[in-house]
Length: 346
Image (cartoon, rainbow, N blue to C red):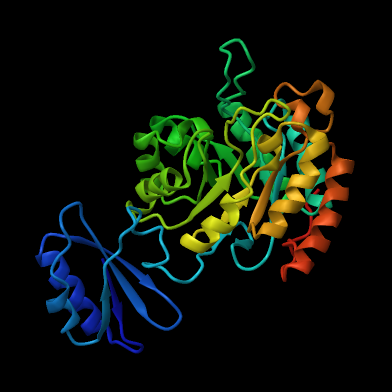
């Protein structure tokens, strides 16, 4: 249930409604739009009788919310949410580009890549310090050493850092280095981890699980949002199907669906979506045309010798060419590719 306040409702009227809801044993989440305030009524029990609330001063309407995701839905928050990442806003009508290698392999590798993607037009740097791998014998990342290298790359280029966190106990450590905490596909329903990143109040990039429905993705986002952390970005990264010619099946349908039913920014990950670099560009362009707020792309200085996911990684030259093409698609759908104003630091 959401309580929609009148345009110009005063603070005392809003506080009175919040106090009434809490007196009935429910929690609240307040969304302040450009014109009016919307108060979400949160609780697992049957929602309260709407009539007494509708008669309170300053209340325009009381609406029952049928979807299981309350805070993530547009009933609660009709306007698009933007998430500040470094010096840019994700979800503000522009196309943000996040780029970098699958994993941090060395100091020189991540710093060199950061300069390359920054020069080509990226506004954030991705790189895994802790890597969940299907095989226990595969490269697992450099851990805190990798986080230090990411922080140095940010210091030298100005690019904010996005990196994955895999364990609730590691959230404080990763948050001390990273600007955005990534929840990988395998951890989308790790509820202890979702709660921990929600409590951290850091921006979160939440990837869709490889077999998850759209509703399950939004319910996972709800765990983060319910902790008061509204800085959540959703990521479509492909789902597992019977198809074998690509690594996953990129669900292009999910982008317009999510843009309609949720206010949260939607990021597309074509690198994991197809898993083969020759198809990444086409899927990236399609995602931009479908309305994605941003793209996260794997870029490696030497993809053939990458320690993880080299097959789906672009080299800097191909990435730069793709950014130029993305600018044209963004313009065609009424957007533009985000840019950074700060100069690159040596």
